[in-house]
Image 1 (cartoon, rainbow, N blue to C red):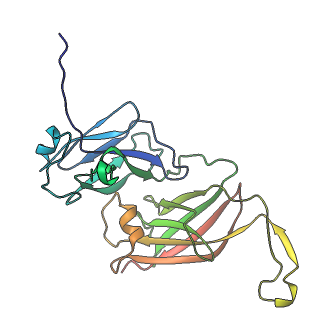
Image 2: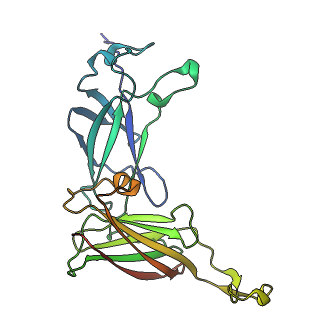
Length: 254
C-alpha cells in the first residue's frame, strides 16, 4: 500500500562554476549548523529542516508569519572531495520569501553558490588566465585572499578566485576578444584616428584578505569590503586569451 508523505522544504542551494555559471553536478559536501540538507538528482541541495522553522515544514499555502522572512541567518561550508573547486563559506537567510500574489517566489528559486576553480582545473585554451601570487610584507603566502580581475577603467569584474595555502589563485577570464583596436597613444589628442590592433586587454587585479580569518573564507564577505580587510591592487596588467600572466601582490596583514 502506497503511503503519501507531504513535506515542505525551506529552500535549496545550487553550486555553480564561478567561471561559466554552469551547475556543478558532481557530489559536494555541504554542511550548515542547524540545517539538514539533502542532495537531489538535479544537483540541488534541498534544505529539509532548520532550527526555529519547524512550523514551516507543514505549512503549504501560507507560511507562518513568525519568524519574519530572512530574519534567521545560517552559515554553511561547501567542499569538493575531488578538489576541482576550492572550499568556501556562505550565509543563507531563512525563511525564504514567499508571496505569489505579490510576485515573490524566492522559496522556489535555489540560491546559486559560485565556487572558484582550484589549480587542478585546466582552463579552456581560449581563456586568459591570471596567476595571482599574494604574499604579506614578510614574503609569506596569504591563504584565503579574494582575487578579483577588473577592467582597468572600472566596471564589473571579469573573474575571481581564492588563494590556497601557497598564496596562489588561478583566475580564468573567459570571453575576451582575440583582437581589439585601441588608440595608438591615448594621451595624444592629435592621433585619435590612429589605432593599432592588439590581443591584449589591460586589467586591474585586486587582492583582499582578512587578517586572522578562518578557512575556508566567504568570498561574498571579502567582496563587500570593510575596515577590517586588507586590500591591494596591481594595475595595469595586460592579459591575453590563451596565455597565463602572473600578478604578484603584497598585502600588509598587520
